[in-house]
Length: 398
Ligand code: FNR
Image (cartoon, rainbow, N blue to C red):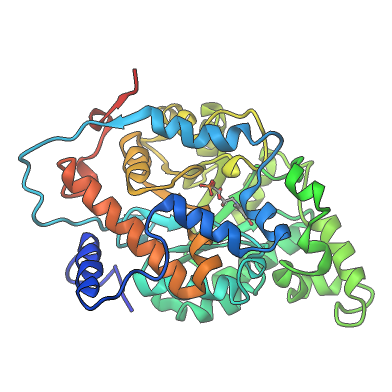
């Protein structure tokens, strides 16, 4: 297993292409599509209609979901020449977590609807490459099972908290994540309510109501203590309690102070788009923010996430770690996020395509391709390390 904290040498991700060409000499072709668009189409075809709508859908008319990609396309890389990119090093450390490249896996819930091994497969694939996985509160397996599948403390991983109504339950989740060796707490702020999602509504599809994606709740001592009968005796009663607890629409910034007091782990707020919210986060003593619109799944009509990034970086970039997700579809997209000031990017839907097609090996193939493409894009643009990438690496499409 790769351990980026102790690996003596950086991983030459770009060499993945030679492995593919060499296998071609032996008559072997890649198992899954290499083109990102073909991979996406193949994954869509592999899922049942409910899961397909859940993974591929967004809020409202999916205008923001499209805008995330379009806004990234408007930024264009301006390659630089003759800058010695023979030896490259993509390694970085974010909030104390060492990683082989500035890339993490975004938290995605209820992954067993995509593949029976769900988050366990993703944890194994991420650990094999040393890429940190952010495990969702709404996972199909418990956070302890995910940590174990990913090789325990040997691999980096963070925990994403959906902030429940009960502070005691929040405290229990955080304590469990600490005990299981998670290295940071990511609090997702953009989901105080579930958005209007037409694809899910059209199929009346919400897996949580069938006890899928609530493993962390069902296993939690505080959650269980609040039930009259155990989830095993009364599954629907447990689902009802989950529905009442899942999110907290009355949450305010004062709650961030309580969360801050709960843990010494780095605290990261996900779903920040406005510079004033970023400043508020800084004032409340958090360690980082993730500029994200949840992949266009919450506020349809919201600004493309990459267009929100520079203003947040201007506001707090010198003092807080700033991460980015929503729309990353290629190595070039990751480079663009770095150039606009992100310390690292989070990959969302593309790793789910790999999961849908091949479980652990599918996710591993996606990660190797994404990191290989990032390595080559950086190198061919004149960067042997992400550290030299800044705003001067980009221009806007006229
Ligand atoms: C998500 N996302 C998400 N975020 C979170 O904080 N907790 C969660 O449980 C989930 N679940 C989830 C399920 C599915 C199917 C998707 C597609 C997304 C949002 C995720 O972390 C990330 O913000 C987006 O995926 C980024 O958008 P793109 O790049 O995937 O389009």
